[in-house]
Image 1 (cartoon, rainbow, N blue to C red):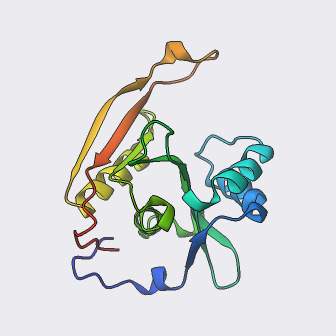
Image 2: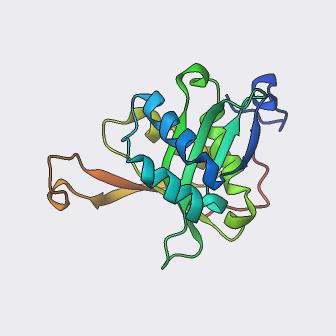
Length: 179
C-alpha cells in the first residue's frame, strides 16, 4: 500500500508514532511474541534496548495505547551513516495494511537517524515478508536493495539458518517518500 501522492490512508493516520521509552520494553517483548514470526529475545533485552537505543527505535500505538508495531534499531558503531534494523514487527491485527513500510519510513525520519544514508538488516532466506518489506523500502526511496552473505550457519552455536544482509541506500532525504 504505497501511494505516489504522499497522502496517508485513514489506517495510518490512526496511529501515533514515537520514539521508544524505557517503559516500553515490556510492550516490545509482547509485540514480538504476538507476531509469531520474530525471534523472541529475553524481556531484559527489550528493556535494555528501550533504555539504551530508544532514540533509534520507533513505536506505533493505537489511540487506545495498544502497541501496533515497532522498529527496534541502532547505529553500528563503525558505520555512523547506517541504521540497522534489529527487528521490525507489526501486530497480526494490522499486518498486510502498509504499517510495516510506514514504520520504517517514520523510523528513518527520527532525529537520531537524520545522518543515516543506509538501512541494513539481516533477513533469513525463509522470511519472504521481511525481504519484500526491505525491497519496498528501497522502491519508496528510489534506491537499491543489495543482498549479500553476512551471517552464515557456521557462525551460530546451534542450528540456525543463514542471515543475509539487506542494504538499502543510499537514502536521499530530498526524495519524496510515499507513506
